[in-house]
Image (cartoon, rainbow, N blue to C red; front, top):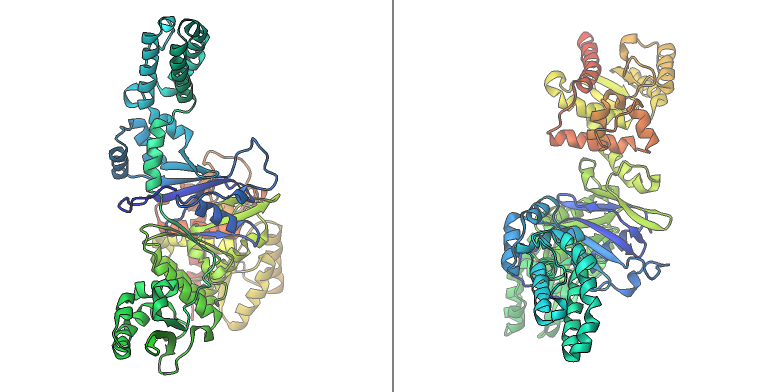
Length: 634
């Protein structure tokens, strides 16, 4: 077990990659979000296995035997977890100071661009990636390994006449792989072939030669000195990784004075409340203890209360007899003293969750929370998210959930999908990529909640009916992007497919509200246009086609380059004659998720669109503005 000096500031995690751990064959690289990373997936998809693997990376643990996946065979890669940490120039300088080893310019550039990758394999072996280890070896003047090998060969040639003419590299100022390949192919075979001559002349000397040759062979196959120094320094800086899969510890109603320091819930409670347990223990009588506890009650309840918006409560400590205290609750305006066990399971869970997380002392810990808030209703789950948001300023937070109330539509960048296919778990960072509906259903529900929250804006005096959620988000995003030209004068109303637009139109007619509709030019869009014209006798001006070309949808208003860069995150060079809508359908893209992510990107700013994309959306937005300008609202 490797001890971590407390004065070392922990590194910050960029991404992780898990292989052959329980149900996880190859997770793929999973990048962390800027504040809270959320693993979303069905039950039994492997979310808990991901968290257990990350927990086992902690330097205070070993990867257990039961981490091996079922069916694992000898010769296959054992369970391994790779964490990549960001490294600043200041932290690189700290590594150099700690190891006493210089770092090549190439290695510095690699660290600043890619971060420091550290792999832990069963049971407790840490190493840096082969690519980075090679860079660390650098050239001869920077590499202790090369220097030691060079000196060892020189000593062999000096001490044993049989080896004076072995061929060594003519230029030692090469990269380690080049020197290693030459020595293995040329020098080592010559040295080993002449061991017999040394043995016949000097048996004692032969033993020394054999040891030196064995050391050489080992260093060539396992060039460890420089990487190991870095690994030792890096492991000192691994953050504490803490898995909370259960918040079942609740504070007991009654404790003896002798039990106060051993009660973890009470110690966590005292820590965030500023209460000195030793002062309670040292109080000389019941009255002194009562005064001490009363003086702390406001501070204790004041910290917990704002995080729990469901009811106004405070936690109260009272002396009980000469050598005991009680811990209970009081509601605002009610002097009744309740046991914690008399409150709801949700409240008990939240209090345990709040105390344990807020009392965590480690700096920049990686905190993993498996399914928080299962016992809580929707509003209380939002309180949980608020606590996590505050803690993310101090720690890196990862949670797993299938609750839509922890998946805000305006922060879909936090979500990573955990998918189990063919009994193997993997992680998908692009949440819009094809997977089964059960996996993405909580995210779609969160988007639906987002639409409902926006319902205060429609229907209004001016309304635009759209075929679906993706149309709503795409047009909302581009209208915001072009807000200086078109503003927000009409409410955008998404339907559930083109066939449902006539029903919405009938409602708006009944309410006396003006509206128009934007329709795709595919078969459903054309059929809907016909129904609106024939059954509802709508003016042609109320119906806008997204484009003059047939079989065109809103996503086809983007150029392929813009669609690839900003909507589906494909390579901008992937240009084909297939329309965006057909391309997305063929790849199993969930348009609702992709369009909501796109809106988030637009709101973050910094996007630059091609002129053709802008002109296509301008045409739609201009038609909307011109229609309502010609028919002023009452």
